Each structure stands twice: as structure tokens, then as C-alpha cells.
Amino acid sequence: MNKYTKAFIIIATSMIAAGVILSAVGFALGGLRSVHFGSQGFYVDGLPGDLGVSDDFLRDLDGFSDMDIRVGVYTVVLQKGDGYGLRVHGRRFGEAPVVRVEDGLLTLRAGEDSLRAGRSGFFENWLSVFPFGIAYSDWDDVVIEITYPSGARFGDVSIEDSVGSVEIAGLEAASLSVLCSAGSLDIENSALDALRVDLNLGECEIENVRAESAVVAMDAGNFSARDFDCGALNGDFSMGKAEVDGGLLGDVDISTDMGSVFLRTDRPKSEYSVDLNVSLGGATVDGRAVSGVNAGSAIGGADGAPYSIRVEADMGSVEIEFS
Image (cartoon, rainbow, N blue to C red; front, side, top):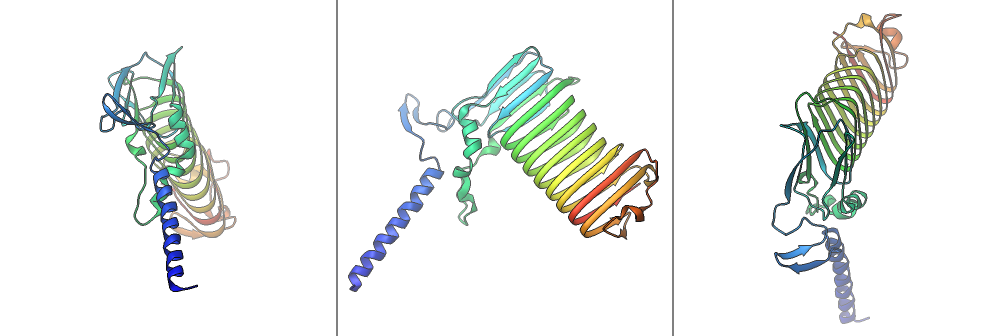
């Protein structure tokens, strides 16, 4: 093989590789969408209406007492306002969410484009892992805001957001259930009878929340609760960090496979029975190191106490502080 043949093969191989890379870039950035020309200019299927035109609308709603929200890729915001209303802005996908109020139930469903994006968002965002940082992800700008008047009290509130974030402020409800595959959840200044959080990957922050009971399940990520007055608290954390600070007025049961657990309660140690087990890692109570396995016997929790704390950690650190 002479040098010209070698050079030809090298150039051809390089061009093929470049074509594959550019095709992947094109598909990841929306190359599978069709482009057509209309009265207002160019349109791209799956993108918000006219290119360069803001997609924003407001709608007043009839009063409702329950919520059932299921979307694919959105930021969902629940907050107090002048009345019952809906605002959608920055909509990236072709179909607007479908909203209905019937028999006191607010039902909100994303368009099929959003649901597909929630299932296949990986294909449009994988390039973000590369050093040049190309990514097609403006999910933080895709917002659904639901407002309700001050003093409104709800029954069941259920939110399912595949890939996005949920922000809740000033909510009073009998039950709140939030399921996110990947994203973030923020809850503040709320009063709930029952709280349930299922988050596969992401962050959950709670501040100034009252809940009679709470169940939290996270596969990977961080859970932070400040000024959290809770009755029964059950937490299952596969990997990550869990921090809870507030009035723990019930049975606390937390388990983690790998990570750290920090509990601070504003009640004295005499009001708790304690069962603490750390297979591999360290444990401290009120700043004093205790034995990891069966550490509860070294803490001196009271028998017959009105509340209990049980923490089981396979690998990591556990820290508990009493008032």
C-alpha cells in the first residue's frame, strides 16, 4: 500500500467519523423535527409556535379542592395568588397542557410532545457531558404556574413530573404526593396532613413545613428539611445525604444504603427511645461519638418515651442532636 492510498484511507475514515458525529449532533439538537414556512415565518415542529415569539398565556380557573397533575418536562409551580388561575410560559413543546376543572378536581395533563420528551430527554441532552457543553435543555424555562387564594384548603394534591422541577409555597392540604423521576422539589410555608415524596434522582428541600406524617423515598440525591415539624417520619435513602431539623413529634424511621444522616430535634433526649445502627461508618449523638453497631444502647434514650428515633445505615455517618 503506497502513501497515497494510506492518505486516502485516513481522509475517508476521518470524513466518515465527522459525518457520524455531526449527524448525532443534528439529531440531538432536534434534527428529526420538520421545518416548514407559514404566514409568520419558519416553524419547527415540537418547538413553541413561532421562532422568536414568546409563548405565554393566562387563564382564570373555577375554584377547585383537589389537584391531579401529570406532566413530562416542565417546572410546576404552586403558589398563592389573587385567585384560582393558570399561567404557562416558555412552552417549548408543540402542544399546550390540557387543563380541566370538574367536580372540584383540577386535572392537568401535558401534551403528548412533552410526555415523549420526558421519556426520551436523554437523546436531546447527552451532549452536555462533553467538554464543549452543547446541550438542548431549556426545561427550567418551561413553567406551569397554578395559583390559589390565601386561605384555600385542599384535599388530595398529586403531582407527577417525569423530568423537571416542582416548587410549592403556601399550600394547605390533607395530602400531598410528588413523584419525580429526575429533578428537584421545593416545599415551603405549607401545612399538610400527609406528605409523600418519591424522587429517583435529584434534590428535595423543605422549609417551614408542618406535616402530621411524611414518607420520603429517594434513590440518589440530597434531602434537606429545615424548620420541619413532623409527626411520623419514614425515610428510605439509597444514596445521598439526608438532613432534618425541626420538631420531630412521632416515630422517626430512617434507613440509608450509602450516605450521611443528620437529625436535629428541638425536643430533649428524654422524650425519645433510640435505636441506632451503623454497619460501616461513624455515629455521634450531641457531639459524642458512640459505637456504630447497636449504638442505641449507648445513647441512653428513655424507655417508654412518647417518641422514637430509629436510624439504620449500611455505610456512612449518622449524627443526632437533641435540644
